[in-house]
Length: 121
Image (cartoon, rainbow, N blue to C red; front, side, top):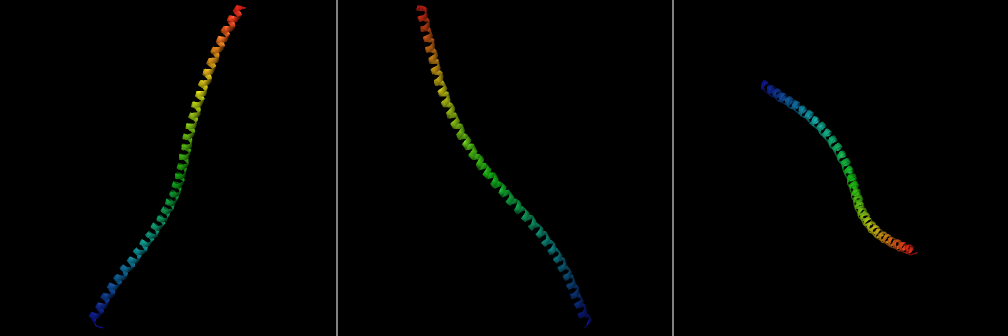
């Protein structure tokens, strides 16, 4: 082999060695990127788990809110019924009070008549 051919092969080998080194470096970086990607996948899985947990809690809160709304509605209806009963009792009490007043007046009249009868005797 002549000297020029030998130098050409040595140059080609040197360039191939350089390319091999760069390829090894790229493999290392690719491995590093794969590691980071695996780490990100793990984080994403944990975030999905948290999101599922939050969805469950939100469902629970919505159910409790619905229950509280139903309780509020029933309390409002109960208040209406109670007010109606109170108004009825007030009416009944006024009626009884009127009757007692009338009876008191009649008793007073009867006592006056009794006094007059006793005065005659």
